[in-house]
Length: 609
Ligand SMILES: Cc1ncc(C[n+]2csc(CCOP(=O)(O)OP(=O)(O)O)c2C)c(N)n1
Ligand SMILES: [Mg+2]
Image (cartoon, rainbow, N blue to C red; front, side):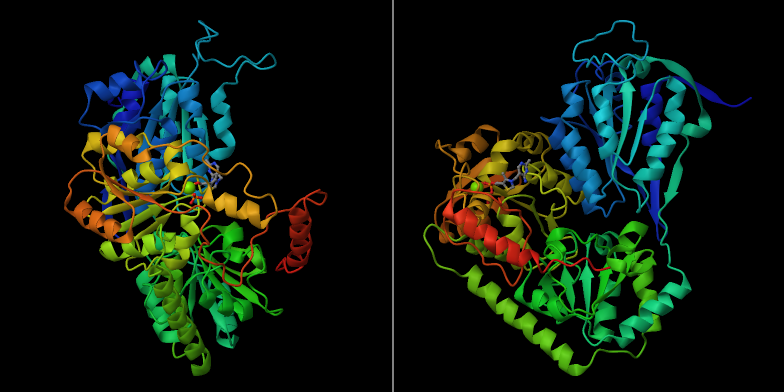
């Protein structure tokens, strides 16, 4: 007879999650860091009871907003290179749908999170229950069906014993480098409380091996030949390279071959900023160095990148008519983009193999010198922008102060507004995990909860959260969670009285910044104080430097509020473009002019077939 234990479906799920282990390169760690939650009907009596009776299973952290708790889970997973995750439990209805934005963010960024929204009764007996969506044409729909397109795996647990296949499928997807994203297990509230005989095997420790897959030899040989033949090759380093922990392999590869590297938002930190091959950011928010080299590159070696429009400057970055691509990616669809020679495999394993096949090969000295010269000139430009003297302070100088105050392995976190672009260009990254800008979904409000997730994953690092006033107003509540959990964040709140980024875009496109100004004064520093943070106000760069120094000595969450000028000229673009469509018919002179320019620029967009 099979050994078993009688447990509720919720108890079985938590017992299972608590003993999941992930392993890569022989190193094992528990996969789940804990469970974020907000209780309501739909999870308070099922999952809630299971958590209450067995607090030893998973660390439980009550959050303030369901969207934010998913962001925190994402921050955690990214910091751990996808080798860790959190569960998020919500009530039915609004608690569940609040998690949708977080689910989309996780899936777009390919980061594992386990979402367990409560659901309406599987029995349907008391229907319609509070917060239930009634659909006249179907009986099997609930608001949780909205999770389907934004989840990499979706299941609804209609009977308690379905926990077994659902949980196993969830872990397969969450630990897979090619499939990671949001996993949603919609959990009807009655089923959560129902019991079944749970086989002991299901509750035993289970190790999920994360493989380092390798491309086939034929593709590798073709790629090596193409790289050898190239005169002006360029690496585009994406997030996949960092998740694979391939940064040492990249450095060895670059030292040997002299091939320069441009970094995407998720790939920033692939090389330290002062490595001679590091051209810094590439694309729409790229540096003069990377964008100039990209324009003439004859071979692009994309590693762990999905070539978003920001990376390719809306397909205008690679202008050499003969440019070809070689893409290293665990995900087959990404490996094939831009008609590349696809190297479907893990970044580190593949780079090591490529380095062997390219033994003795190097780009010519003239090209190597040119790239290094451009990289040095770019660093001078960073120094210029870091030391701008303006009143109120220029945003670039604010970033310079934060960079100077941070230690090499501290982490900077940001997501939306004008700062991601400036950080991409200007942040001097010294550690592969020191730069964390969520730019797959660029979701306002990610910053504080995302930073919280980073801190949970890396308590030994100082976490600098850079947040604009607009993003702050959207989702400040997790400051309370940081205080409650004794997790220290240093939040630098850059208040420019509105949506500077979108305002600048709007003015550039002729619509005069319409709707982007904060029209009533708000004392955000006072707000942060009321949420429990220690607050410093800084009006000058000297005050900011002083506050940053004092913040380092604090052990609890600090908010440094800095005022900047929304209309000040920002960091320029460097030979790049971003496709934002302009009205074909308009009465405003500025819009018509912008449309004319738009049509000219669009001609440069390539298909790379
Ligand atoms: C949830 C969400 N809504 C809307 C947007 C579009 N958006 C991008 S940046 C931005 C303004 C951000 O304002 P703030 O945080 O003050 O940063 P600033 O642009 O002033 O630097 C908006 C509305 C977004 N990225 N995310
Ligand atoms: Mg702002």
